[in-house]
Image (cartoon, rainbow, N blue to C red; front, top):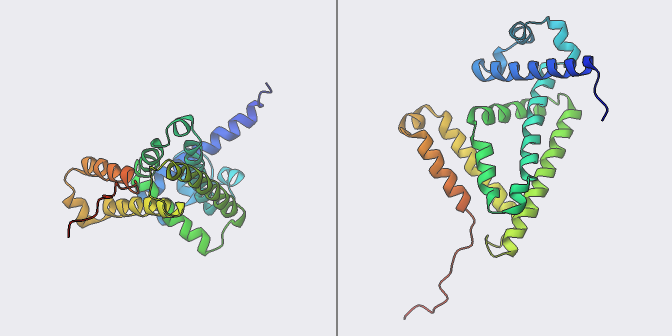
Length: 212
């Protein structure tokens, strides 16, 4: 197997360090308050070194989002999901809800870069990965519908309902009012995840004619 030259490995390691540090700063201070200089200082490198890896802060945004969606893509194609389609719902909810702050950050970042038409080639890559994830989810959902496990509705009904539940859960997490109401956040999100796993399951209908 061909081994990457040391300089290439070091370049990749430094690039990942920049991404990890940027994400930490965005979560702690908000992306608008974080400058390229702040990222460079936190990594311990010069500002110019950042630009050897990324052309702009928007490119850093998109690289973080791409990595996130690729991780989901890998999960959806995992052997565990292939062996047990019922594991799909739990895996999806656990992935989206394990870090509500990061989920909300990426939601904001996508709106910014798409509206401002920044780094369109990376936005296109992001949308391609999303399309691949959607196709995989559709395939898995169709399989469960065919098995009689899920309601026989268009697969995107199930996918979009899952997205809506996660989105609502993240909004609750960040709401000053509701976060104070949720005394047991971990227990609540486990409860919500259990609902999400069952959501869309085919209901057992009473076939008997109601008494008149």
